[in-house]
Image (cartoon, helix red, strand yellow):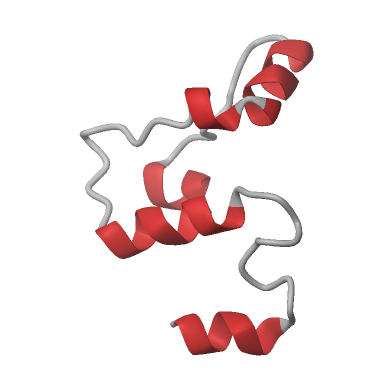
Amino acid sequence: MSEMLVGYPPFYSDKAMSTCRKIVNWKSHLKFPEEAILSRDAKDLINSLLCSVRRRLGSKGADEIKVSL
């Protein structure tokens, strides 16, 4: 989703291992670029998908996502 809204992947690196590290440590690597005009709702949705499985939006089924929209 972030890639669709911003235009490039949020954790890109030339090396696969570096990309994996950025994903695992997403809290310190996820940055929303200023040139990408994202609403607060878009940022909140992206952040709600980047968390533990138990807390992730949609972990209780598709209806949870529909209600949040």
